[in-house]
Length: 217
Length: 102
Image (cartoon, rainbow over all chains, first blue to last red):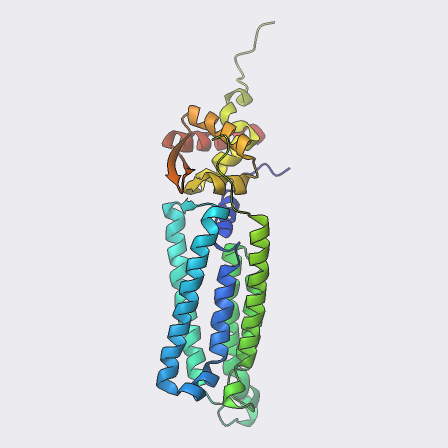
């Protein structure tokens, strides 16, 4: 019998239940990736300047709607928890690092999508590296970000998201496809993540019905 | 038969209020957060409303947790948090249990 009271695990379970059990974060992530996946396509439709506005407007709507749904869903079903100062501090550090990494990944993606990183003329010794080296670097960064989150939060599916998005990013530097189609793998990866999020949401709604009144209390 | 007082039984020093599995479950979950409402506690501990209510009452009586009740949408909403005494008692309990089991 394990006689240890694992406080870290208890805290992590509370955090997972309060934050990731409903699948809403997965749906947000997936929809954001779908939006990124169609970035080049909408740019061709709207033009560069309008497309940037369109992108941030849709992103804002996605995040706003999902925060609204989360605030409606969670309190009545799983309740409300306030984490201690130490946990909140750790959370802030984690959010800051993740935001920074996501920003760097997004910037890299943006520069790649706009052909700032076209494959260089290959020398005989570095042909493969010249063509795929940068893609591989992006893929490893994406995998690293998601793996760190998966490890820190004990969320196995984030390893899968890292691998999935890493593979999707591998195809992002235009090689042979038309510009508007080069990011389709990213959109497909996003669609799969939305699917997982919807599955988690359905399971969440089934497992945590709206709590009845506090009987006998 | 006279009791041997030279070797105190460490088990006798274990706090029975915390030692009950359901109450230990509640107090451990409250130890890692600042506060949690009863819905959250019920989901984490897997206790029924009745059991949760009974065990919370005992912990309140012992002065280990405090409960703040408000009315939200005509329903009672209770939020529990560990008192300083409860936090200290739980830390002491952990040390005592480690002594007993080493």
